[in-house]
Amino acid sequence: MKDFAAPMARLIDELKRLPGIGQKSAQRIAFHLERAPREDAERLAASLIDMKDKIRLCRVCNNLTELDPCEFCSDPSRDPSVVCVVETPYNALAIEKTREFHGLYHVLHGALSPLHGIGRQGDANRYGHPGRF
Ligand SMILES: [Zn+2]
Image 1 (spheres, helix red, strand yellow):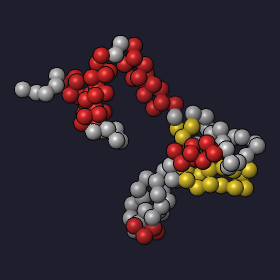
Image 2 (cartoon, rainbow, N blue to C red):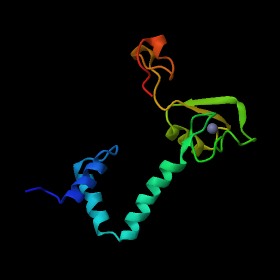
Image 3 (cartoon, rainbow, N blue to C red):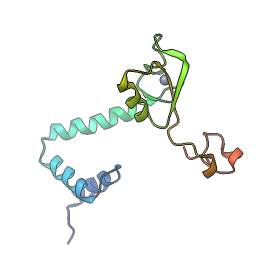
Image 4 (tube, rainbow, N blue to C red):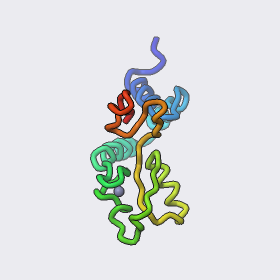
């Protein structure tokens, strides 16, 4: 006998693919969604699709954005002579919350580690390893 009906098991399997979500959390979220009104599930599903359709990388700084260039790169009050290189868009957000930085960002979408063969995208030949991102 299976633990869950197939649609419930499929949702739990999908939720477990998310970072930080294990079996118990996935089950808890799945049961919560099962009890929630259909409109809540539709709103969640629509927000996922909307995010996938509209969020892209800024062509200037690589940050996640709906507008290209992003709000930082198109803000004339920011100082373009100062660029903060960050590992993830999350890091840029944390710096923004300090309200102390007024330059621009460059988002790597991963750590650089030349000693481990992880370079910028396109550095694969230089380091002899495929780029990680
Ligand atoms: Zn940008």
